[in-house]
Image 1 (cartoon, rainbow, N blue to C red):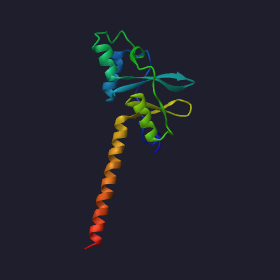
Image 2: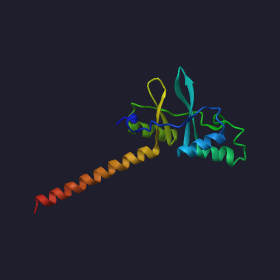
Image 3: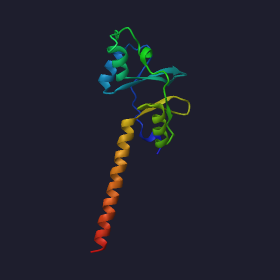
Image 4: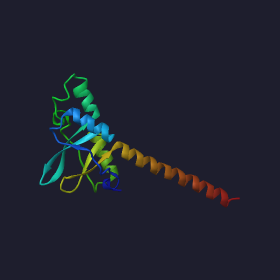
Length: 149
């Protein structure tokens, strides 16, 4: 299965200049823990970073910095790991593990943002798959028991 089949295509985005206080408000109103920071090129949005709720807590709140004084570009992770929408899920999971990230913007062939893949998405999918496997085993046992009566 390709990443593009399960990624969330409704991504909450921000530009580098968005004040951190407004970023926190966006996260709250959209019930998300991150914003994908984008740069517009040729009318398309390209991910250049991610800001998480943890970034805000660690870099701003805990440090006692005024959240109005910083833009998300000041605290974002600058080495954004992305995955192409046609990449396989296990390859994406391996890449997430290698990079030590829980979220990755999903891009098309030109590098434009099309969605976001999170560890939560992958865990949900794997849980569904495990449930189906368990049902298969149970069904097979029941079928065998019925055949031997």
